[in-house]
Image 1 (cartoon, rainbow, N blue to C red):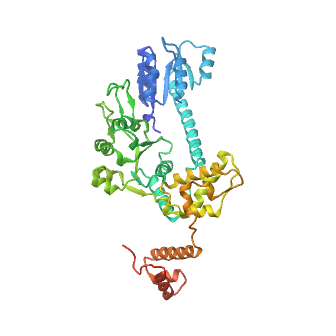
Image 2: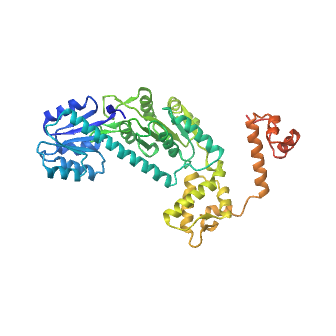
Image 3: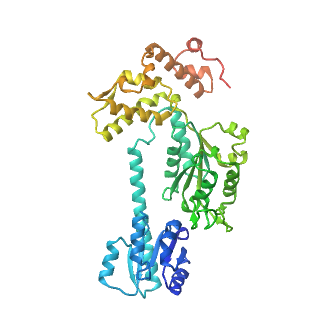
Length: 453
């Protein structure tokens, strides 16, 4: 990350000292100065800087209290304490409280820069460690991409291609298909992976709150705005913003978002100073986008800006071959988490799971398996009786094995026809059968002699 994108917050009750520090540091960093220590904690919480430089001894709230306040608010911001009254006791106390460093006045500018860079590097390592732990936790929580179907593989191939770019992506799919997970994978595979990723559910926020969350606001911009606040377009610098359910936003917000995309700058709510932004935008929707445009709930110009690349996530019912893999993955996950010795799904249970249409998609399947693990009182197997009642009616209609063979043969022929651009001679050769045999099978299986448009 470039130093110019990092912010250092300086707290010192001596205005000259604070300004001298800021004048030197702003050559390489963004700086914020506060000479009233009683307001410092509130401003730090709002501004979310990358480092705090604070004097140790100040009237009212001293540097130790600021350090304690940050820890109480769970703000992992490194703090360097400055003092003209050095003592071993104060240094030990500061380090015990979690200070990143401790400097005695006077000090050289070279020493200051060295200590600042060291604290920032250490904080970057801590953030990276946290990110890796969160990533591992995400994989363990069942949010990993599971499946080997052709439909899913096409999605992952497209994700791998687009991740290496800064191209805007629009992810379209039903609720529960994993739109946020795909957005996170794109971020994690991109050059922005070390910067923040934020997911915002646009449909869950009012227009005013959504604007305040994304653009931030100035003090006094509206009732209750007691301090300035940075929005996600500032906080996520260099990272990725995932705007979930973009079609649920108000047209006036869409106009402002379009300006951010075009100009790469925005105004805080109540602000007059344009602020530059450097984030990648990934948006999503569970709606038919052409219908949304026709109804006026999605601006067509915003649609074209957002959907440079469009990723279409198939519903679970369109990739039933992935259901056994997913179900067994969730079984292992929740058996471990709930501490149950349940290690398999019965064949009857798998039949039901593959026949059920899964309107809630992968999210619903995960919930069903979690419930099933809880319901198993004895034994190590999930039986149909452990499934919710709305799945029970699928138990009585197991598939005929001959129907499964017929469907598999039909899928194979259609897939091979497509691979051969519907050339039946090449298809027959690839399937190692005569042309007449291929024609007979196509007629028997109801496969058209011509490709469907």
